[in-house]
Length: 84
Image (cartoon, rainbow, N blue to C red; front, side, top):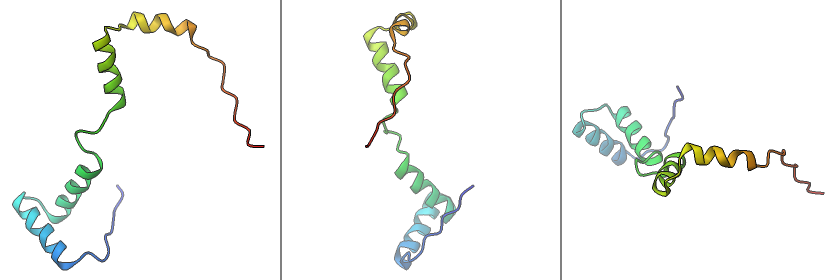
């Protein structure tokens, strides 16, 4: 598992982290992991697959509808762009 080192953290911030960790019954390291997880992976983030599935349900689409569109789909491989 990757490790992260945080340099130049002020003493006041480190003390505040230790206090916050104690309030949550965790180690300082576990508290920092929780803070980082919450910051970069919030519960309210948009999950594209979930959003598309919910939209399809609201529209009343079924698997049969999706299957009906499949034969009409262009399966020709895309041509790479030329920057010349």
